[in-house]
Length: 550
Image (cartoon, rainbow, N blue to C red; front, side):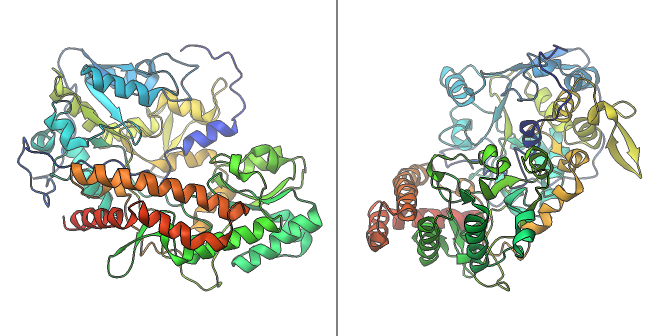
């Protein structure tokens, strides 16, 4: 193991954040687009059905050792430990069991998308290619098969990837959209996706200074009126510079925390009849923007939110300059310890609503993110499929998630629990130890996300229940990238929505800050319609209906 030059004893906030970087609400993967032919002649409504019972993977996968190559970004927790992920303890054990050595081709950190595009352009692909939302074949996976880049797995999956098929169907009990999203519009299986063993729920949401609430005699806010009362008290009585921290876009596109109570999200959602609506074009968006403008004028919102990132500036919180902010569930204990006020107490708060009894119906559906494809030119196609499938078998998934029994985990009450080699390693922080001895997060395997809870205080874990209070997902839809659009429809949709989204992003901030008067809101609606919103909704509706018809 390459020695790290920095101390490993302190578990940093960044390391903990890495545990949940892939999160439970995973970004939507690009669903394939239509093409002229199909090697497996699949039909749109078919999914692969297994025959007979699953049997353990026959090991070793190959009698003599082979080396396969894999394009993949390096995990941030491994950058100071190994140059190649294939040299970690986990992949050394995988090699010992399977006789397959994985030689990772890691692009420079921050250059992953460019390196992916250059690889595709060159036509010289690694045997396995790790794809993601920002790294995917531009014309869709059907086109990638027909253009000779990726292997169509449809015919091979039943015999070579039965454990993966089982994992897909297993998650279908929670959300069938996940299983459907693993197939292209033409019904092909092209990618093997990173799957969770169970939904993770809301792993991000809003926090507030609970100690300030108690000091001021206030309850945890539930309604928008409650929030205005609390934020005003933070400003007037605590001298808080930024009572509420917002992200640069002024809306949280992950869970739409502030707009849900007005019945809208920042993207598409459906009504009872299955009709799609684009939130920023609906009346609820105007109500939402009007409220934030009012709060901004009253000094209740960070005046510099336009330059903020996805996550807040931690120093604003720890120095008592902010009273409420967006974060992930692993942050509470760490930030409390960093606050200049030793009595600081931070707690999660439920999604706000107009009335305390209101039921919320909107959220992002759990859909697929990273996935592996096999090069159509690889001489080890079957071996690569079997290797990836092993990560979804009972034995392979246990290894990927927890490592080796007696070394990195022991069974406690019938459940695997990490040993101190992971939780209290004298050289490695928790996230680093997990990345070295087990599969890092957001990788191709059947992931048990609950394994990370051994490093998270009970108080932090309770965030899940708080952020999901009063939310039933009734009007949620998968990400538009998962809808069944033809190549031409998707290209047209993308062009139209790029123009629409540009207007939404710009004007939303301008309305909130007062740069643009709310008297011009009707002009905003006219402009997004003139940019082709109605046609974009028409294309999205057709793709959504086709997706639902599978």
